[in-house]
Length: 158
Image (cartoon, rainbow, N blue to C red; front, side):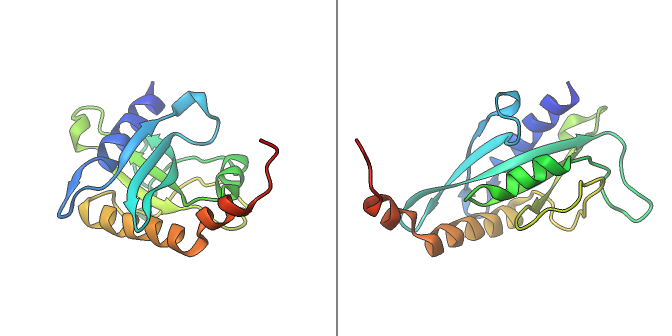
């Protein structure tokens, strides 16, 4: 129950309006996929581009050092980082008494993953300003890899 609710809150946070309007269209995947909870699209330079999110939620609050207490297993992080797309972890601090006051924080997952996560930094809340930065990061990723050129050139049997 807590996980589904956290995913729903993360989905709402990703879809919020920013100074540049709503930037992400999302689809909740949740339990249908072992690693990805949310698929998100945004408009890029040459059309729609996408990224993936895993969501972890907690009611346990923060460590003494101010990090959000969320748990992400190593094999999920390794799988998430292996996708050829931008991938992120959203940690949701659930406010069970007043759910709209719940907060989400975002962390990129890329490169080799060598350990599980038991807490995460809260430097990057999921808010309007960071959604603009996130959109720009996702668009920049797809602008640099140019998958359409590869798609037109690869061999196919069909």
